[in-house]
Image (cartoon, rainbow, N blue to C red):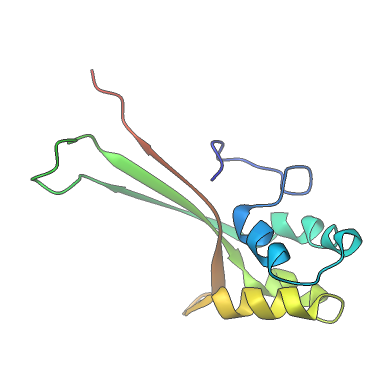
Length: 113
């Protein structure tokens, strides 16, 4: 989970979802860098704010921000990294706007006055 909203994924460490995929695949370390340039394209940020359940001891407003990544951004890698593309395709969900997966997320709470 990142602690910053703006991340240049071409320079940062891989998001957790990719570290997980790489741990479970036979992707050569030299080929992993092919993924980095596409991570900054076709992103969508969604912010969800909510109050915890009434019986919760913490009544601060919580915010969850998800960075969704359009699966189309990975299409150039489908032939060179088929296992990575297939796994990300499996994890993607369909919507009216396209197929997305959660690339990264951050959760936080407002500070008490």
